[in-house]
Image 1 (spheres, rainbow, N blue to C red):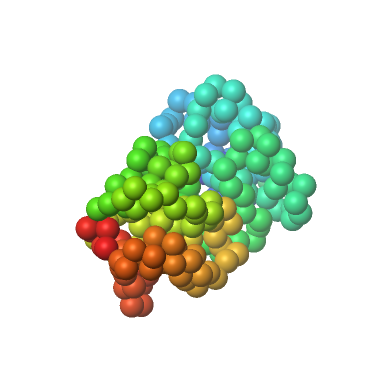
Image 2: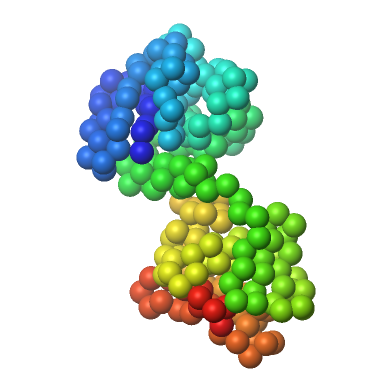
Length: 226
Ligand code: CA
């Protein structure tokens, strides 16, 4: 991924550059807000932008607001030294896609950047079909054959995750990253609960087995829909 980091604490900026580069990303760093906005506008396109909240020149909120005002949809992860819901709400109001409070774990940062880029890269599919199982994520409708099936939003998200990759193993953590808004705070085993309720709705009443367990990893959608 190509990543822009706007961070005025030089030690932190440098460790982000080194860490993200070691993960194979191409990283550019700006140490003040004006330079950051310049790079965001002319240095990209970036796959994701990491914005510190408190910056000399121009703050993270302002940069994000201006990016969005210019129609720049690049995912933004806001870094804040302050904790609290108010900061989070401000960041999201400015158009940030996620936020992280310092100090943070580098592993968590990496995972959340990947999740942001993935969400941005894969727009909502139109209609998913696997065998006779049909899912329309936009209309929130699911059916098997001619029978409509009622799903909750979360069940629908989990099912879409699997139906987008028929026949392939999907890790619980990847499902969590895609379907939950704050996946870092949640145990991946929660996915089991939703898979279990999905099986009761899309498989059991039809005598089918479409969501297969991949031991030690997660789940796989049977390529023929079960
Ligand atoms: Ca700062």
